[in-house]
Amino acid sequence: MFRRPTDCPDCDSTTPAVSRRDFIRVTSAGAAVAAVAGPSLLRAADEAKATPETLTKKLYDSLDEKQRAAVCFDWDYVDEARKFGTLRTRVANNWHITPQTINSDFYTKDQRELAYAIWQGIIHPDWHQRVQKQIEGDNGGPWGASQNIAIFGKPGDGKFELVMTGRHMTVRCDGNSTENVAFGGPLFYGHAAGAFDEEPNHPGNVYWEQALAANKVYEMLDGKQRKQAEVPSTPIEQKVGFRGVKGPFSGIPVAELSADQKEQVQKTLQKLIEPYRQSDRDEVVACLKAQGGLDKCSLAFYTDEDLGEDKIWDNWRLEGPSFVWYFRGSPHVHVWVNVASDPSVPTNA
Image (cartoon, rainbow, N blue to C red; front, side, top):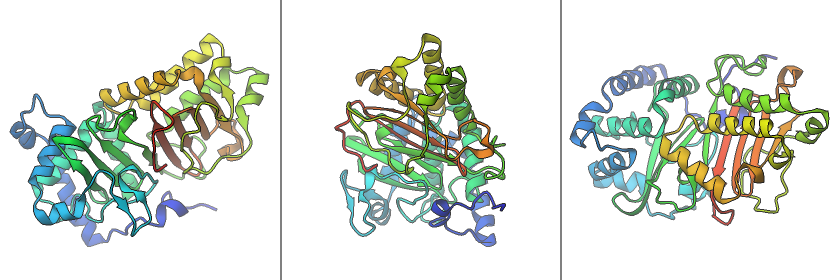
């Protein structure tokens, strides 16, 4: 039975409805942000030196007392009311870290522009258009209409981190405040494009090329290796906590692959980190190196949810002692990311 692209029990359960009036209002606001976000603010912050971190401080400094009370928290704040645990380290496929949306009247025009510029700085320029397409398509409105932010700690004074959330998005800006952790903590990204549960090739999905890169590894495997790499049951998607050095890890160990197969795994890794700014890419590589590199990881392809039964695996996972990149393409793309240099690093994943 055909379902609309947004029909996903996990995604729809907390997705706020956007009325026609609100859609027009936030579309106008979003168009204005997209048109002018960055230039005036970046001039004020010194365009040559502006980074997501310096812009986060500028945003923090611009907040009034009421705004800070709503969106600023202590570093290890625990959200007991929503039973989220440590709020800063939470990750989910569809959630709102604070109720105020970026494009709402809660923020000033300048603050909305700053938030947009911060997001642009986190995402690699080559991916701005693609990720914005995903956000607009999945949320039924422009960037900022359904996204939220929270700031932990005090920017410019020790540890701090800005977390930006929404449907199919959890991204972070931490200025490397979180030691031994890539991205500042676990991430989530996804995309529900087109008739996702009827089209195994995921037309229009901005992230499907990542799965195709991983599937090229599978194509290079011989019969015995494929049997080892294939896993019959897709694990729960939220399970992305670290397993440590002893694992166990499902699938085929990368260490057992041939040189050309390992090269394709490396190409897959580069494709996975491609959407993010260079400093975050470098953090991922450094964390992976600290735990022994890709040779300490395993690659699993899950056979129970193969859309189209075409052996182009929609669900797969690259995992090491403190590295998880879990790609689920069924019913639509959900990707869970958790990377650190040490499996003892606590997370809320």
